[in-house]
Image (cartoon, rainbow, N blue to C red):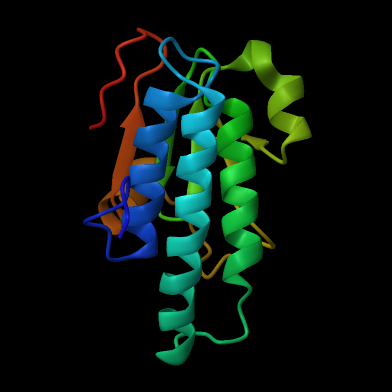
Length: 159
């Protein structure tokens, strides 16, 4: 049924696979093409809708707008995937390590600089802090898991 997302069962897996596919097929990358990227986006949207519908029927936070979050996540990732910086996905956050020369682009897509973590971050919607203490990126990685694209070296390793 799905050519690019055959084994995907969750929205988190979908986003991870989407990011991997973008690194390979995005038109800005060598070997990428507009047609394949459009196919991937169409399939992504269809599967996201199916997974989101399942999540809504499971009564898991039915008031939250997963579609808007999904659209924003895709838009930001598509606009920054080509920059020469490490891009890391932690939970529903996009973290960009380095990339200071792209600060105007990062700001324009809704990223903000986190001075204590010394990197850029994007999160859809309002962020509500549930604790008083500063939490390190390592603690956040341990809680939510992390996938990194090593862009600086042009070695696209997911790790």
